[in-house]
Amino acid sequence: MSTTTGERIKAQRKALGISQDELARKLGYQSRSSVNKIESGERDLPQSKIKAIADALCVSTSFIMGWEEKPAYVVLSPKAIE
Image (tube, rainbow, N blue to C red; front, side):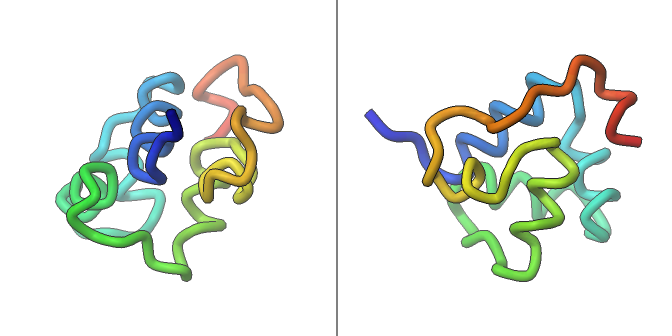
């Protein structure tokens, strides 16, 4: 069973211990609402944010888009992305 883009984003965000608020700030959103809507599938992922989300979550854009089943690389600490 394949996962949605939002489910992959949510799973990776949680794996890194990043809140929706933190991810929203990294992406330039005013609040976590946009991240929540992307994760829940209520809002499509804007093309302009794909690379930013991948970078913030330390994964490839291919993983975010579902072209790879697992992240291409692993971050050992959430602090590595700051």
